[in-house]
Amino acid sequence: MTATATTTAHAHQADWHPHDTAKGRVEAYHRDGVILARSVFTPLELEEIRETFVSQLELGRGVMAHEDHVSSNDILARYPRFVHPHRHPDTHAGVLARTHMVDDRLVSIVESLVGPAYGAQSMFYFKPPTARGQALHQDNNSLRAAPETCIAAWIAVDDADEDNGGLLVIPRSHNSEIMCTEAADETQSFSNSQVKLPPGVASRAVQTRMKAGDVLFFHGATVHGSHPNTTQDRFRRSLIFHYIPQASNEIYKFYQPLIRPRDGKEVWIDDAAEGGPVARGGGKRGRGPSRR
Ligand SMILES: O=C(O)CCC(=O)C(=O)O
Image (cartoon, rainbow, N blue to C red; front, top):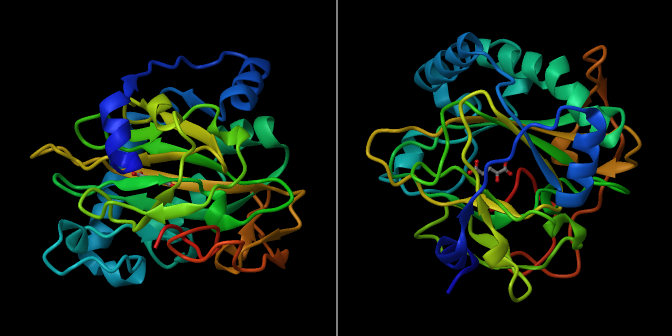
């Protein structure tokens, strides 16, 4: 049984509440490796995000679409994920991604958790009805930020739950090192590798339920992923940013240049060496933007 299938059997519902104080957030983040902030983006903003990214798909998917090597009859060929849209300032989607990457509502939470930060990556997932999910993984396996790690801000652009492939997370898994990987079940996941979990850990997976506008913040070693979208009519769109502490010495080159939120300037730090103790399909490797 794959880790993804195992979590199906054991996932339970979470209803995390926002932590009112920065202290509460920091404690929860350090304890669990994940916190939820509800209603960060307004319905109007979400409408703009949806319309802009859907229009960008119609205008020209090639500009931002990531090559995930899906077959031409896969629904994800029609709705590829966008990677680094913020690097396309000549498009409305690019401007919007860059604007939200440095949005003070996100950055102030990120910085209360990890200190001054740089934006490293933006992504947009359409996850249409019937699309496969993404097997369990740890983001810093790709970003390779050191000596600390990255932090994700995962924005629900649509309501996201167990039916349409909302995010699964394993709270407290961030206390583990970056783990070795193994082959994923590609009938369930568009990515081809997943973390090799120690016994008993998969059963701690929690199925999140997020309303559009909620944001999940999680640590670069927090194990997370998603099941397929099993609905016939509900997209599960998400806008995702990754940040790293400004104290980082290095990151994998795919994520450079970094963006300094305070003035929007581009910043370069040292390139992290690619690779780790185990090769692709079986271990650590920084390749960006993750998981293929
Ligand atoms: O949105 C998903 O299904 C997975 C996203 C993810 O794993 C990530 O942002 O690293």
